[in-house]
Length: 332
Image (cartoon, rainbow, N blue to C red):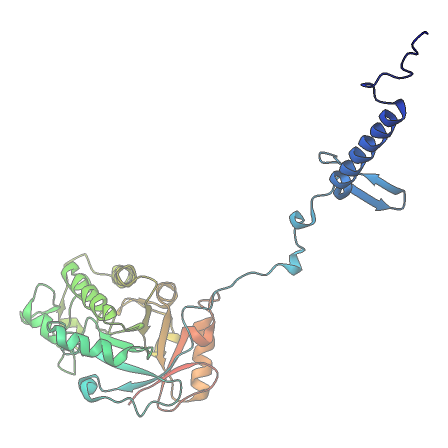
C-alpha cells in the first residue's frame, strides 16, 4: 500500500501568517513615523502638511522670535545717588550722639575735618575709628571735609602752604591758613584724608573749600612767576577733583559745596571754578538757598549742567528749614 505524503512541510510558515506580519510591521513603522513627524505638522488653509527642519520658509521657533521692542523689559538699576534729606550734627559729639533729632528719612551730616585742619575721625586710633564706623552704620551718613583751608597742615609743612610776601603763611579774614592747590604734596595729602574718611563707612563725602582763596588780601599771596593764571587755577581744581574721585571710586558719592553766587557767572578764575567742568566731575553740588524759591531756582540752573542725572538728586540745597521736591541739608 502506497504511503501518502505530507500535504505541507512542518517547518514552513503559511503564507497568510507572513502577510499578517508584514501588515503589522507596516502599521508599527507608520505609528513611529507619526509620532516623530507630529511636531512638524502644520495646519493651515491648505490643509495638513509637513514643514521639516531646514525648510527655508520655516519660521524660527517661537522661543527664538525677537520680542517686539515695546515688550522688552530692561532691568534698570536704581540710581546710586539717592535724594538726600540731611541734617548737620556736631561731629565732635559723635561718641555720645543718639541721632534723636533726625526726622524720619534724614541722614546725619558731620563735618569730619574743620577749616583749621582738625581731623575729627580719630584716624590715628583704631578704637576711635571703630566708634565712628559703629555710629554711622546703616544711616547713609555724610561727611564734610574742608580741603584747602587747613591751618594746621599749612603750619606743619609750609611747602604745601600759600605763602605771604611777609614770608609767613597767608591767612584769610577768619585767620585760617591755606594749602596751595598747585602743590602736589597738598593734593595728595587731602586725597588721602578723603579716602580714609570714606573707608570709615561714610556713603557720601562733601568737599568744602575746594578753591584758591578769592577774598581777603589775596594780592599778598606769592605764586611762582609766570605760572599762575585763571586757566591754570581752573586746571588745578579740576585735577584735584579727578584725583579724589579716582581714590574713592563709584561706591562713594562725591559732592562739592559751592556758593550760590557762582550761578551769576559760572566761571570764577580767581577761585579756580568753572561750574560746568566741576559738574561733570562730581555726583552732587551743594549750594546755599535761603528758602524754597531760591532752592528751586538754583536746582533748575545747576541741573541744566547735567541733564543725564535727576536734578532732585544732583542739587542739594543748604537751608535752615526742609524744602520739598528735592535734596536738602539743614545747616546751623
